Amino acid sequence: MNTKHSSGTEKPAFFDEMILPDGTNRPPYAEVARWLESQTRPMIQRKQQEAASIFRRLGITFAVYGREEANERLIPFDLIPRIISASEWRFLERGIEQRVRALNAFLHDIYHRQEIVRAGRVPESLINDNEAFLPEMVGFDPPHGVYSHIIGTDIVRTGENQFFVLEDNLRTPSGVSYMIENREAMMHLFPDLFSKHRVRPVERYPEMLRQTLESVAPSGCDGDPVIAVLTPGIFNSAYFEHAFLADQMGVELVQGSDLFVENGALYMRTIRGKNRVDVIYRRVDDAYLDPLAFDPTSMLGVPGLFDLYRAGRVTIVNAPGTGIADDKAIYAYVPEIIEFYTGEKPILNNVPTWRCGVAEELAYVLDHLPELVVKEVHGSGGYGMLVGPAASKKELADFAARLKARPSNYIAQPTLALSTCPAATVTGFAPRHVDLRPYVLVGDRVRITPGGLTRVALKKGSLVVNSSQGGGTKDTWVLED
Image (cartoon, rainbow, N blue to C red; front, side):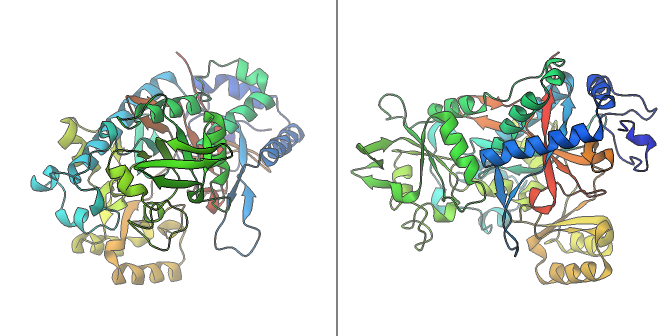
């Protein structure tokens, strides 16, 4: 199989994380390159089938909504690990920690004095008129001042030392179970390759998650905090992950119907009677958390939960109202946010962003639509977006009409030259575009799992890495010094 994919028919026009412009391999990929040379197509195909069997047996699937065909699928797993050097990871760690600390400071500020608005650094309308802003959180101090405890920061690379944050996921970021199971699969499938590298572990994530959740228990908690993972149920696309994390942490997985409020405390029903709960790791959206406080039709939440939270009797992770900080309209101001709260320049850059709600920026976007990526402010999963260079004339015209009808619902960004890593394809090894989602835990301190989830656009030429849009995942190896 060809490992020098720069000499094949698919020539990389982007930054190649494995191969240097002169055709030699970058040092962190030296062992992987030698390993690839020894692999035959039938061997790789057998290992691919074995990996699929492992994931199918574990039940690692995701749901595809709005499709006629069966909606439960395996996420494609690429067998070639992505390698990140120790020095590269140290740089990313510094930038990620700076960013999450600033965003938590921003959340505290906007739900209190709004100093950043008073200083004219962020428009008031972007806060108070934003549907992700939760007035019910105004004036409330969450335990230890932490709003977003579990964060997935999406990062893309465009050059040797060029990294950009694509978006911040501060609500209920998913995918960490794939990160852990990808590592397990690689250690099982290719132990010899793994043993030739000093790879930093990811399997401690559930332990670190539990430590983080325990550290933000209510001040009145008596003894070891009781933790539960609140899931919407088995029909949720990330249900496997909810069950996986509860099992790995050794805590209960509950639905709203398993919980109730009584005498100023939260309890769960068990076969041994009621058991008090101190910390809820919720995977339920804000609107459905409590039918008495938010959507009265919700069957997923717990009546009285929000009042109990406001009274300091239970901790909700992540805090309600955190979505305002990862809103795509706010994203454009994150460099300002970092400078305002830390006094430092951002270590990790934002992608240049045009806010379509601003008339002159909308005019630019409409004039350059074939060159840009346009996203819904509240969109996710690759839905509701336009990739201009890949769009037809009709798609461009239709999207222009949408922009004119609801300009404030969209932002636009340049089409980034995402870096590539080698991937196993039906014709051999070929470069495919990737991004990275490191997972960050914020409690008594900031904990960052080394690496994270690499998502890969398996379709030739595609820049969309989302699993719902044909993307897959691969194991991410952060090397020790």
